[in-house]
Image 1 (cartoon, one colour):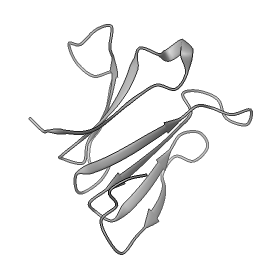
Image 2 (cartoon, rainbow, N blue to C red; image 1 turned 135 degrees about the horizontal axis):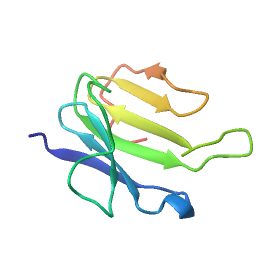
Image 3 (spheres, helix red, strand yellow; image 1 turned 90 degrees about the horizontal axis):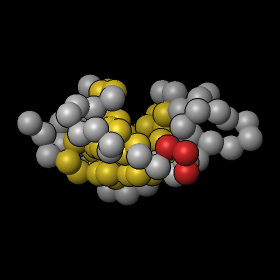
Image 4 (tube, rainbow, N blue to C red; image 1 turned 45 degrees about the vertical axis):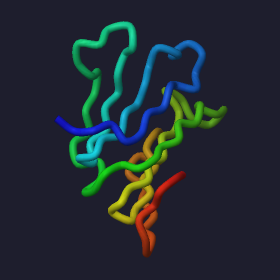
Length: 99
């Protein structure tokens, strides 16, 4: 079991029941808050260290789906996920405490 370090609720009104969780293990999980039995999706090793902060932005005219998710970690990276930016990374010299 891993400790929750960051939590964001969906910025999209039609998906208000969705939440993203960043864990101490560097794992991300997407949850449907209407059913708390298990996460909808799990991204293991989204980071190699604890996820310290995240920000979830709604989709814009040029993007579809659930929008963009930026995560900051003690592994000195900021990662941006979402169409079309899945897998974009920013490397920093120090641990990133907030996005």
